Every structure is written in structure tokens, then in C-alpha cells.
Image (cartoon, rainbow, N blue to C red; front, top):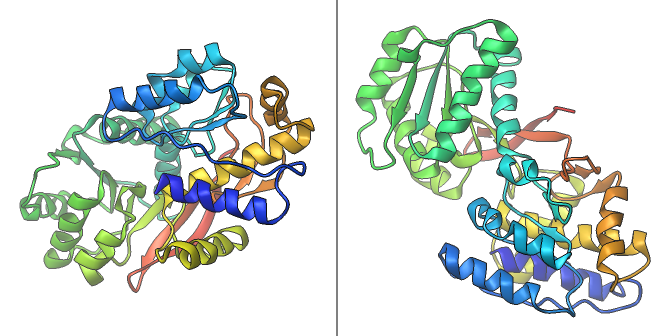
Length: 335
């Protein structure tokens, strides 16, 4: 899926004349399904002196494992993961097109309180590390910005293997919470949504993008309706660049787009933009420096503007599932 987004961008660029008159070639190294294979694949690319830039994995832990090697190779590297630790390392050659995880948690908390009016939330979160951290961030945001302390009994963790959420939803129902904030992944979200519907729990509910999947829409059915969620990209979002991307991708591959291929698609176009600013397709240092000059560039994930932490976006898409369709309802600016 990652490759498909990058390949579509390359095909479009070449059909339009290439970059500075040169045709683009996509060189692929398969990271397979484990950390060591991913590191090996990246090192293979880093040893190829003919490459202009790299569009890397969307797995943050795999990116963090190669940051030193990327800096030593001095090649522009588009990191498709969203972990804020990547930005915090300050690697001069690594760039992140996506919104960072810790910002996403703040956006969820801000939207929950200021737009949905949730003043007494329950925080429901998976106990895997990449969900616990944002869950804690939501709690901290309420405390720091609204002077609202969310009691520990209103912070409910669950195992990814949990199958029966009825007792947890009953606990939420009895708690007096005026809203539900969820941080987790799609498979538990199917069961959670179904349990909420079965219990008749009618409170605002908002989640991270982990719930946004056709798996949820197909398996939870009408129980999926009503969820708000932050979102990097979803196929049904109606934006000018995104709609064109969805149309072209489906025509080429016969499938709907997903975030994973949207970020690689944008990543290739960011490299093109930097090459054109620098006036070269071969001088890696000039191209890397030109990334700092990217401004008001319209991509699938949003409008790209350079920031000192080597990220680009200024806002999150906020979506709601309505009639089992993920719909864009707001664009929440955070800087």
C-alpha cells in the first residue's frame, strides 16, 4: 500500500514531464514485516548513490532505528511515521509529512471540551504503549488548560485481546460521564461501538484515527455512527487534492485510498517541490535545504508549510461517521 501511493505520484509526475525535465524512477526496498528487515532495506537504499531522496516506512520504531544512518548518508528522508520522538531527535535530513501523535491527543482533548462540550469525560484506552501515551496526554491537557482533573476511576484501560466490552460500557454508563474519549485501534473499536449501541449509551464520543477503517464501518454497521475522530486522511474526505488522489488511485488500483498510501503520495510530491525550488535533482544537500522553503503546498494530508521541527502541517482533519460514511466536519488548526 505504501508503494502504491508513491508509484501513483511518480506516474503522474512523469506523465506531466517529470522533475526539471527528468523522468522519475521509483526504487523499492521491501521492509517485509520486522524491524531488522526494515533496517536492512533502508541501509540498502542508503548505499545507493544514485538516489535523490528516500520516502521511508510509516512504522515509527523502524524510522527511529535508522536515524543515525540517514544523517551519516546525508540524504533527504521522508519519514511517514507520526511519533513525536522522530521530530525531537532533530535530525537535519528527516522530514515528517504527518501530524505528530502528541499533537493529535491535544486536538482530541481540545475538540472534546470546546466543541463537543465534554467536561466530565471517561478516557477509554488500549494498554498498548502507543495508546497509553496519548491517553495520558488527554488527561494532562484537561488539567493544564481547563483545570479539570479526570479521576483515575474515569481512566479505563483495556487489553487488545478483550472481547467483552459490555461491563466496561456499563461502568461508563453508571459513572455520570458526559462524553467518551477513546484512544485505541480498529478491532477493539468494533466491539466497543457495538457494546455502546447495545447499551443505549447516548453521549458524545471522540477517538483517535485508529477507529477509521472500513473494518469498523463494515462490522459495526450503524453502531459506528456518531463517532468523531482525528484523521490524517480517509478516502471519503472531500478536498480538492484528496478527491483527485482518490479518483486516480481507484482508477489505477481498483481500491480506495488509505492514509498509508496518501502519505507516500504526498512524500514524493514534497521531494518534487524541493527539487524544483533547489533547481536540481542530484544535489542532495541543496534539495534537503530546499525543504525549508516549502510553503503553501497543497497535498492530500493538508497544506504544507515548513516548521523548524521538520514537520509541515498546521491542522488536523476532524471527521464524524455519519450514515456509515467518514465525513469531514472540521479542520482544527493548532499553529
